[in-house]
Image 1 (tube, rainbow, N blue to C red):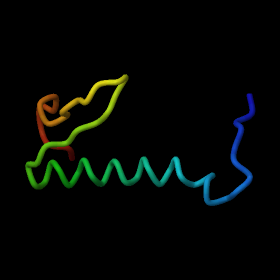
Image 2 (cartoon, one colour; image 1 turned 180 degrees about the vertical axis):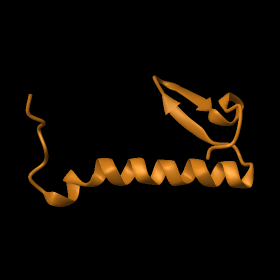
Image 3 (spheres, one colour; image 1 turned 90 degrees about the vertical axis):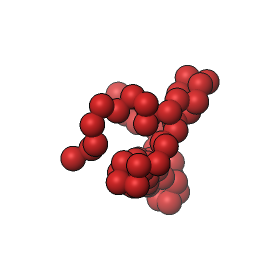
Image 4 (cartoon, rainbow, N blue to C red; image 1 turned 135 degrees about the vertical axis):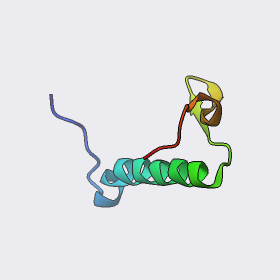
Length: 56
């Protein structure tokens, strides 16, 4: 099945950029021992409580 990619090249790169930014934000939260929240299925979740150890 073919993906429906936007014709504008800037919009086509948004998904990767957001994932990269989220990864860096989570890594920074682990390093600085600060809370890290996400919005999932209509709920705000604190991932700080869910992690058992620091990320590599």
